[in-house]
Amino acid sequence: MTEADLLACTDPRKMLEYLRGKVGDRKLRLLAVAWCDQITHQTITDRDRVAIREGERYADGLSGESERFKAWDAIQLSKEAAVRSEDFDRAAWLMCLQRPLAKEMDADDLIGLARSVSRPGAWVHIRDIIGSLFRPSAPLCTDVLAWNGGTVRRIAGGIYEDRAFGRLPILADALLDAGCEDEELLAHCRSEGPHVRGCWAVDLILGKT
Image 1 (cartoon, rainbow, N blue to C red):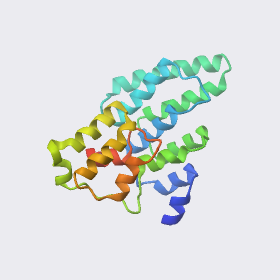
Image 2 (image 1 turned 180 degrees about the vertical axis):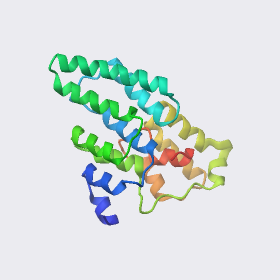
Image 3 (image 1 turned 135 degrees about the vertical axis):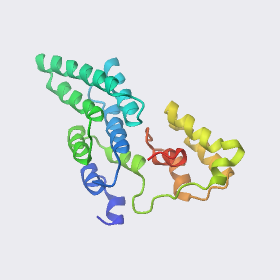
Image 4 (image 1 turned 90 degrees about the horizontal axis):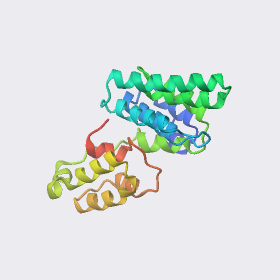
C-alpha cells in the first residue's frame, strides 16, 4: 500500500492489514477500547463501562492479571446470561468487549473486531491513534518540552488522564508558544477528531508508544 493509498483508505480492515507487525500491543488495545467505547447499537451498562476502562488500564500497564481476570470474568457472566436469554447481538458485543482484555493481541484480533463493529468512521480512530507511519513526527526537542516549566507536558498529561480531548487546541497554542514548528502535530491538535486515549499527538509529547 502506497502513502497515497493509505491516506485515502477508509476501510479499517485494509488499514490494519498494512499495520500488521508495525504497531505495538498498547496501541492495538487502545484502538480496540476506542471502538468498544463508541458502539451505539447496544446499551452499555455500568459493568460494561468498568470493563472498558479496565481495558485501558491494562493497555497502559496499570492493571495486573487479577484485575484483568476479574473484568474478563464479569463480561463472561454477562455474555452467558445474554446467550441464555437468546440476546445474541448483545452476546456478540460482549465478545468484542473482551478483546482488549485478552492476554495476547495482534492485528488479526483487531481485524476481527473491525468486522464485528462495522461502524462508519471506525477508520478515523486508526488515524488518531497511529498517526502517519510513512512520515512519523520526530520526538519533540527538549526546549519545547522544557518551556515554561514543562507546561506542554503538563497540559498533555492532563488531557490524557482526564480524557479531556477538548483541550487539544489549548495544547496547540502552548506548543506554538514553546516554539514547536511541527505543522502536522499542530494541525492534529486543532482537528475536530474524534480523539481518544492513545491519540498519537498526546502520546508523542508524553513519550508513549
